[in-house]
Length: 558
Image (cartoon, rainbow, N blue to C red):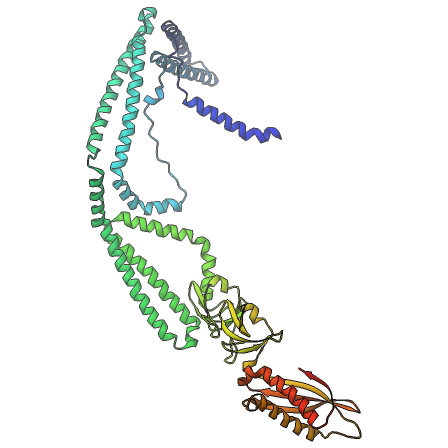
């Protein structure tokens, strides 16, 4: 198991060592002395002579017509092996003579035949369509690329000349007196070949230097920058400016026409939420965008600037490819925009535990409104609203349980007045101090809005013995008269704020007591007098009972 775990590391180390060995200079010939080099050259020449003799012998054997096919195949393979060995020894002889220089640098690369691909490749087709753009880019950068290539070629030729001079100098230093005649003959031949090759390389370097002089721009950076900038403004800049002005102008004019048409249609609320109308509006918007982009591209293409046309085409292509993953999201947005989603325009929705009306839906955002909240307008994304449900509203539905200025009775029996209510917070006044509550938290409270009217309920029990039975109508009349009188004592406006006063027998507790219930329904204008009215009701019951000699056994406010 450990061997398999270390295998990738071993392979990387082998590759690293191979790379180091590949870039290491070949020094085996330079380290040889003159005698050693001559001995090695003689040895190589003897091996070459031996190989040549063996090749001649094999070629003679191949001429024999009595050989079988297997024998001919074997002799041919042996002859091919000798040819390969002869080629290797000749290369080794040449490399040794030249001092061990890298001969592969002087080999001309073989021309590769273009491969024919019969399989359809859409990427290749796209490149074929964009070929004019690439050709234009190639022409624009041809001078810089040619100059860079010539500089690299000049460096390579200088390196070749240096290596060739070193090799020829090594060849000249060989003492030919120590060599046999055949080796001397080979050295003489190589000397002539390499002198001719060196002259060819020097001529090629002179040609490269002359071409570099023609391509070198001696102008200052500021002059080149200003000239190129002015050329860009007159050509590409003017084409871009015209394309932007015309396409944006068309988009703006058509957008204004669509907006005017939309406002006209919004006079009929049912038409705005209609699927056909929204689909038509979506088609208009899509046509506006597509036609504006088309105008931009046509102007660039008509100007003859294929480079700008290709750049814009590539940008649009990359945008289209990058938006592929967002297609499901856009489909959901279109569904909500067409009023086919769970939340629909003109309906009521609960968002953050607060009721809202969906007043407008576009392709990106949804606009929510609550008329009873200060700044009660929100803008949220379609993705967020699509997860919620809406329902149709009735005209008399409340959008919030209170308004600014309302007087409320909280669950803890505190009386507060609404100072302000926003989508985030509700501000309440309680005896001069301000209470701030979250709007969603306030909406969940079970409070009473006294400003919309309220009722005061009081249960009380009177002693009712068989010897002195109380008359119900008499008790009712005197209690009602006492309540109005007590209310007037507290505040002269209170009696007029009593909408209705009801008096009922609640239950017969025993033969000696009867329980009564009195309910005072107050108008909405009496909200600020709630505590006074409640106290006046209690006082009226007690005072009336005492004035008439009735014994009160129990009272209970509800």
